Length: 293
Image 1: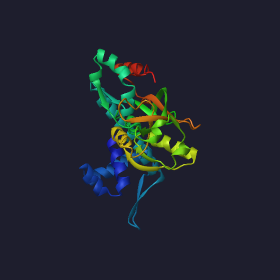
Image 2 (image 1 turned 45 degrees about the vertical axis):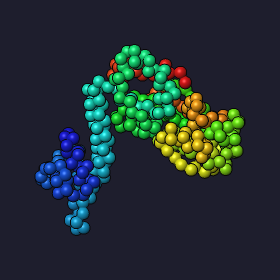
Image 3 (image 1 turned 120 degrees about the horizontal axis):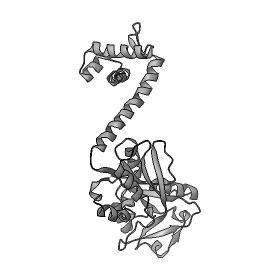
């Protein structure tokens, strides 16, 4: 079967217009028609019918089935192209959320640097949600990711490294900074500065709020952790962050959450299911699995 024929067929189904498809693929209209006919012979079933009475194109049941499956074939081929193109390159495309990078990646940076591998990593810093999507679509090879719950994904394999608790963070100028523990029920009237949905923090924050029956005001959301911290430091609102993400002399402190809800910052190594790791990627995986959370 010619994958070009499948591409033409998908385009016809989408546009319902042979002329438009011919122009799009820079072929003649008869060439598009012949591609459809070859597929109909291949599957021994009509795929497209012309309703001359109503002047419209009809996609048969067989045609719809082929369209759905051909899209999966197309996606698989695209993924194979990305994986093979990446395999030709000396670098490993490595996804690393900023928080995990700051907290845990230094543990493995030293051996990677000693072996001369650190410069072989093409590090992509994004939130875990974006990294998982890029992994699934073959844009990354391996990654460290975080989640509010253990991950069970159909197209991405994850290996848990451990968990860390979340904290409420406050400015050292805030009266709450004199405390070391707090419950979400005490925070109903407090304004918050949040991270956006490219991070896993908003989901965990919503779970804590729902369990406590409160709905604090979210003043602002950002994808920049440093910017979020700076607003909290200015005492313009509280924050919600994984424990240990606060560093000395930042002008903010973390408060332990006393709620019985045990939402955690789950950290895992992730790579695509069915992806054949190269020897170097497999070695990197073994190094990452030694991270102590």
